[in-house]
Amino acid sequence: MDSYLDGSQSGPHPGDPRTSGRSLGSAGNPPPGFMGLQTSSFTDFLASHSPGLLPGRVLPPVVGDPEPRAPAQVIRDLPHATTIVAAVCDGGVVLAGDRRATAGNMIAKRDVEKVFRSDEFSGMGYAGTGSVGIELVRLFQVELEHYEKMEGRSLSLQGKANRLAFMVRGNLAAAMQGLVVVPLFVGYDEVTGQGRIFSYDVAGGPYEEQRFYSIGSGSLFARGALKKLYFDGMSAGDAVLACVQALYDAADDDSATGGPDLPRRIFSVIATITADGFRKLPETESEQIAEQVVRERMTRPDGPPAPLHNGSLPLPLQRG
Amino acid sequence: MPFYVSPEQAMRDKADYARKGIARGRSCVALQYAGGILMVAPNPSSALHKISEIYDRIAFAAVGRYNEYENLRKAGVTYADITGYQFDRHDVTARGIANWYAQTLGTIFTESNKPFEVEIVVAEVGATPADDQIYRITFDGSVTDEPGFVAFGGQADQVSAALKEHYSDGMSLAEAFAAALAALTAPANGGERTEFAASQLEVAILERTRDHRTFRRIRATRLEELILESRPPPAVEPPADSASTPDSGSPDSGSPTSGSPTSASPAPPSGSAPSAPSAPPDSGPPTGPEPGGSDRGSGLGGTPPL
Image 1 (cartoon, each protein chain N blue to C red):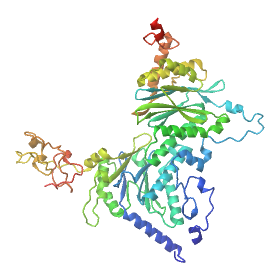
Image 2 (image 1 turned 120 degrees about the vertical axis):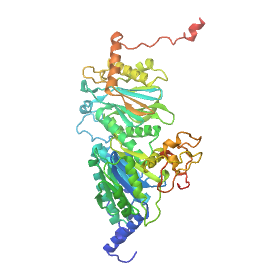
Image 3 (image 1 turned 135 degrees about the vertical axis):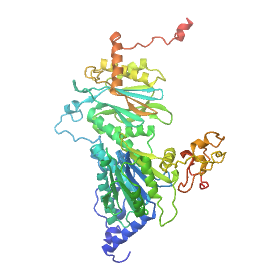
């Protein structure tokens, strides 16, 4: 008993404690349970304790695959999620996503939720492989909550955006094998009282976006629509309407993005984040807005027009 | 280290050492009330917490050596988060966490030179009061189920006896808080009753009806209000015959004439409204009628009532 206790003999232990993010306990062994943790990051903890739980775990190479680098057909057939839009409004930010998941040319699911609350003052949407996206969302939620419980305070908004970038980078190996997921992260910055938008690429980020942004297969159309509809200092209500119009335009031109499904009552998921926190619009509200948009499009199918002139003639014409 | 120590002696020494360490601190209480579970601990520090959140409906309270139970707290949070992530949020239970703490503390007690001088309570609020759970885990890893209420640390036996007197099922938050304070301030060895100011208490609840994360700390203004609410209401005094002398500028909280509302209303002197904030609070248990509840300041220290 003496030699075990005084450290001259260390008992068997799995792995090298120095790389596990944990300090050593008595007798040179890693302490029991999860004691002696040196990180408040849940993702870092998983990486040392159970890396198999991380979304980015590398798949074993497919034996006999003639083109090992190209994504196998099975991966191409996984459901993919599509268009997410975000717009900064007065006192916050709006985040909205469509409801369709496609696998190849088939609609895999009509009522996917792609917009999630990350914590009280932030939210995220994702585009890419559905299942990996869901995992990323869940892991990020736990990451933020874990940090808050450990440290007794929430991360700053920039800190949250950076953590998400790490997690996206951690998925890079899987992304190169075809399991791509790219988030769009938005939050209310309690320090400045403004909404902020952060985008990512497959290797991480974050890229801060001004005013509005969109990701996914329908993002080009959504961004084009928001270019014309958006103006600075819009109210939250106007920003919501602009986002719904943008999603409608994306669905209009991208088969992988779903528009409002009136018969089944499936509408975009819309959330606002303001000083009052994350608020997902109830189904009834989303339905009302969708019905209003559809009604107006009956008269003008391309949606609300943007004025061609800004109210005054451009300068060169004035001189003439 | 002696050349040889019998295992029984070693264990006994460790247990005594841990027990003494735990008895040195202040007691902490956790009890059920109608709206959830209340936890109260005397704690002068605003940065170092004895009571914390572990998961959505689960809280952690501890007494003893701070760095040791802080370590356990973080480990418990990690265990809960990993369980909730691997399975689902609803699969994280106080029972599982209590068992895990029992294993961890038991291992530490047996295998390390110095046992942890800590005692831990893990509480979970259920959908109904019948589903609430409170577990106590001692320094050597023994777990006990403590239905209704528990007092631990410090003079636990005395606080527990006092708490048992004041506890009843289905109390409101104010009533439960009053019971907790009464137990914590129970005179020890016939000594003086101590009173707690808001800044000396750490108070938290698990709110049954809240969505998602139910843990809430009660501090600052809300805690002061709760302290006021939990004190016994002023006894109603029949209108005194000397009602002609409403307190003219004297904020004396013990004056019997100012207790009846009818005597004060005919000629309210300026500046002596019953809600004058400068009224000195009574430093002992209330002995006489008080002019409304708002006369009591928040620990400004003053003369005892007449």
